[in-house]
Image (cartoon, rainbow, N blue to C red; front, side):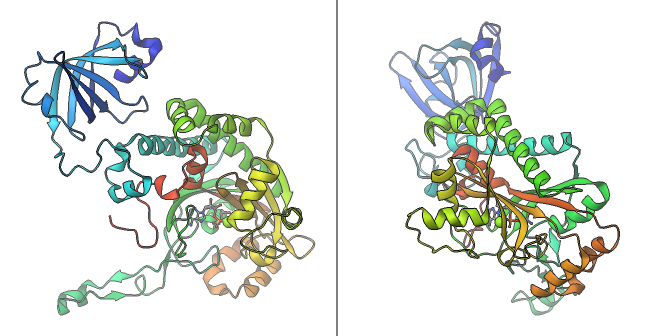
Amino acid sequence: RVNDARKESSLSEAAGESVEIRGWVRTRRDSKGGFSFIEVNDGSSMGNLQVVAPAELENYADEIQKLTAGCSLVAVGKLEASPAKGQATEMHATEIRVLGWADPETYPLQKKRHSFEKLREWAHLRTRTNTLGAVMRVRDQISQSIHRFFHENGFYYINTPIITASDCEGAGEMFRVTTLDLERLAKSGGPVNYSHDFFGKPTFLTVSGQLEGETYATSLGRVYTFGPTFRAENSNTSRHLAEFWMVEPEAAFFDLADNMSLAEAFLKRVFSDCLEHCDEDMQFFDSMIEKGKLDQIRGVIEKPFAHMTYTEAIEVLTSCGEKFEYPIQWGTDLQAEHERYLTEKHVGGPLILTDYPSTIKPFYMRVSDDGKTVAAMDVLVPGVGEIIGGSQREERLDVLEGRMAEHELNPDDYWWYVDLRRYGSVPHAGFGLGLERAVQYVTGMANIRDVIPFPRTPGNAEF
Ligand code: 4AD
Ligand code: MG
């Protein structure tokens, strides 16, 4: 109610009505005229509300004048048009109840600006800052929008396992699951013993729900899985996490062209939902984090995405005269710097790259007629690089078996996956969008650690 009333258009409707705000103090300033101005953050996208506390309040001297950053309170009062700059409304409090105190000697979020890097040390408190609060609200919006889009387009939401025996991406970047051996622990009294298996079988935290997703696509038609995925890659970059969230649609009777159209419609829907439902937060990012973000996203929604094959991209990259740190030639994987050159300097917007060499892509991608490339597609965006990776899947039994042999995969581990090609095989395709990379793109946040509540990176798993 308080935030509805705070929207300028509805202030007059709320005139005279008492409202309540519950939240945490950002700052307190006492005026000479016998007032205190308390900025209160209630977690909403409306930003902080200025609460004006008159000296007549019964707890003015005892409590209100002792409020510091981080204290929690409930304030009751009337909303009035604010004479101060930068805020439409303020509250004239008739009652303030303090719920919890915060020792100013130890509360880390003091008024000065902290770097995002510093804020990561207080992952449990940093969402009380304007930027992290806005990021997490946009992250929520993107998650909700993902579900809405797929639900409205006939995709069933399925839950794929987190503990698995297969390595979807074939990169060997998996965390092993171990069972705490309580019996031995009790006998020995320590040190802690772990048996390196899942009740007798080696298992891992999943890198992708795709393989299991394919089993459901080839029965329900269109499905998506959306959950945490894990990569044990020891990379310390601004766009890699060891634990990240991925949404993976998978559709039977889809080819690469269908897959690309789906990815484009999907991203545009997510972006326009952010503009529509996160107006205040998006304005904030536009003015505080990346100037021009709003216009950039509006432009992206209007125009068709650019398309290019991997081979064409290599031609562009080798003839553009740009000095890259990593050399590039046909057959090597693109690095972030190459993806950024293509999206930022060459096309100036999102780019769908297709038809990568089979040698740099996983075993499940469909081999094209040239025998050298696969029906792969990556969606690249300015500032971030790859946000989507996907492909048409290899539906031919003999070709899939050949590819698995090339990748030295044990057919016993994938018998159920191969079975899908044995019984009523159909063309099908899908992709994966990294949720955090999408949040980074929409908000303009430079580091992926600042768009997930509790980032997991090498050396970072404190709580
Ligand atoms: O390109 P990737 O590895 O593709 C897959 O996992 C496929 N099985 C998806 C599918 O076709 N169903 O990962 C997909 C996306 C990437 O484009 C990127 O956005 C994100 O997941 N991603 C990561 N995000 C954060 N940290 C990491 N370490 C990531 N690795 C991939
Ligand atoms: Mg990829």
